[in-house]
Amino acid sequence: MPGVKGPYASLTPDTSGVFVTGTGTEVGKTVVAAAIARTLASEGRRVAVFKPAVSGLDEGGEPDHALLRRAAGSRQGDEQIAPYRYGPPMSPHLAASLAGEEISPQRLRQGARAAAAGAEALVCEGVGGLLVPLAPGYLVRDFAVDLGLPLVVAAPPGLGTINHTLLTLEAARTAGLEVAAVVLTPWPESPSTIERSNRETVEALGEVRVETLPLLDLDQPGRWPSVAA
Ligand SMILES: Nc1ncnc2c1ncn2[C@@H]1O[C@H](COP(=O)(O)OP(=O)(O)OP(=O)(O)O)[C@@H](O)[C@H]1O
Ligand SMILES: [Mg+2]
Image 1: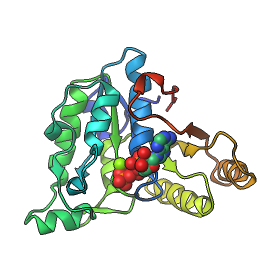
Image 2: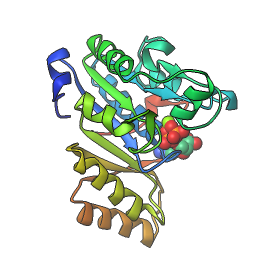
Image 3: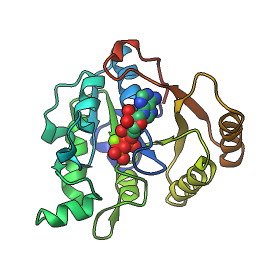
Image 4: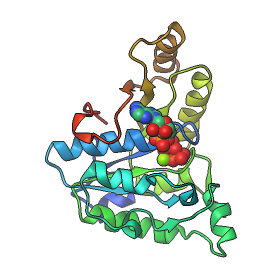
């Protein structure tokens, strides 16, 4: 995993990290971020996780920050992982607005820096895709740039993924972000012609490393395969 770069580096010189984004919402970002965090933790590293905002807590189930914490073996509190948490399932800028507040980019940067300070590796999950607004004039992509972390892009393996993934790569590179890898998830045991072709096509046209992640039993992190970010 490449080290942390940019302005963030001087704040956390001993911490490496990765920023997991995706081609959209519900595409496997949390699972990929959790698998990376688990891999780093099983290598003996102290791993912190971070997610700028979590919404949809009203829907029940294990929220993203809880799965990330469990996978990383982290002892961070909810607030330290995800400073903004909302009940309704909606874009963070809207959830914040309905809660009568605005997400503060500075608070996000400070939160991620504090999380990284207590760890050897930081795994940050974005929200939705790169162009989702967090606050007026501040996209998820801006936060990734501020952290200076290389990106991992989670994407589904099936029909439609070529366009969504290449758009995401273009949006990332336009902003000067480095893309470490694309991860197709969940990758079936017997991939179809389309899925195998998608992998090769994204690799060739996107000029990017493409990894795959099989369907995981999320209750059994000890059985997950290693994912090299
Ligand atoms: N490799 C995998 N193994 C098991 N489940 C997976 C895998 N990849 C994706 N999924 C499932 O797909 C769904 C979406 O995954 P996930 O929650 O990681 O998406 P997300 O991009 O983080 O969503 P959000 O935008 O809400 O944060 C979940 O139900 C998740 O369990
Ligand atoms: Mg998620």
